[in-house]
Length: 480
Image (cartoon, rainbow, N blue to C red; front, top):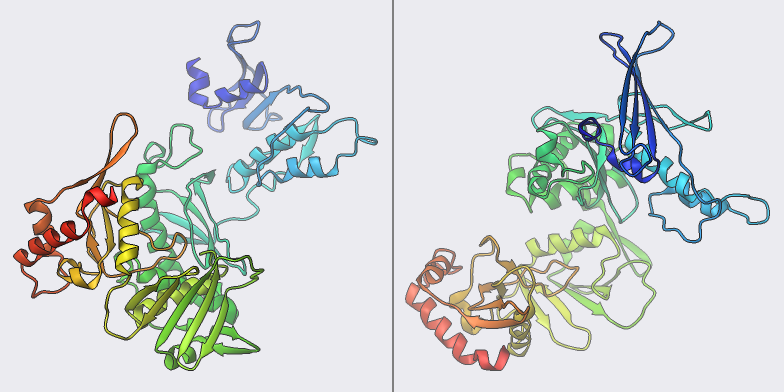
């Protein structure tokens, strides 16, 4: 079965017992007919290769054919969201006028359409000798960044759910990449398939994900900056693109070399406040405080709600879910303009940002709640946690980072930055799957905290003493 393995379509035998391949070389005009049989068929996986004489009437290329039998009316089925043909078959089926429900055929067509979407190799599909339009490569890639060997399409949309559709040399694959503000299609040409994709060639190799993300950000910035007026032809799309540039430029150091100073269209974005719409830069010039109120009671929020009370902007968000990309951008800008943060306890907690002196970001009571949750933390043994004022000797620089140490999230969907410290506690899972908290402090940890301290006047002994006070105030027996 080496040939089948090389051709990489063993899974076709889940549909049929026999596949016939007719292929003619572009270069030698050698013509072959190959019969491949399923290992589970009566021909026991047999392979027959025939070399045939060819004429100019037979064009170079490959023809693959097989018979696929389905139940006329399946007893049950499942359909993915992207299976438009299968969905249409289910939607249009009438048991009184249709003799068959072609769900499975629709799925096969959908997979072929996905594969052929960007393929530069012409693909023709026939069903019962009738040609089926595959829309083969009707939408090519418009932009190319030679530095990353990456082709791109960029789409400004009004949707708040943005997608990055990824291809490797024109073959679609799943990557789980996400974007804010804009939609993208990416076509990867850099590196071998064995580096980029898993063995099934349908999904990205997880080890390549971060590398592809860096390529995407660098290429998208390069293309957008050079082609801004060409891609974005109205103010609304220019505002979205401007938000994209400023949002990601401040989140990724690799983008610092790109000059985005001329793309400040986000300033013209208008927020709806009561019956008025006010440009964002005018609001920012007026306010000195922003409060984000998390509404837990059911409410029909079509959009995030904004209120302006003198110099305070109030943002109401339902159950931590941001309804609009623009609100995400506003929160990002608030962090730069109003760096002091405080969480106000209550049935519906409020996050408050201001220009006032930074005091404790959370109450001591809520800190104890956070510590009690550390035992069941996932993915990481130790976490960064909010640092209240009495332990400010342990406060870290805002950009302090340590691999495999994650930040405790005050809100699942809203990225809240706060004065942080490194927790003295680690969560360890035993062989039975039980978690237990341990206090682990040593010279390596003290040194790292000292090297990343927020206040340059803090000494290493100050750090040691503050940790001693912390674990005395929060005994592990009371939180673990």
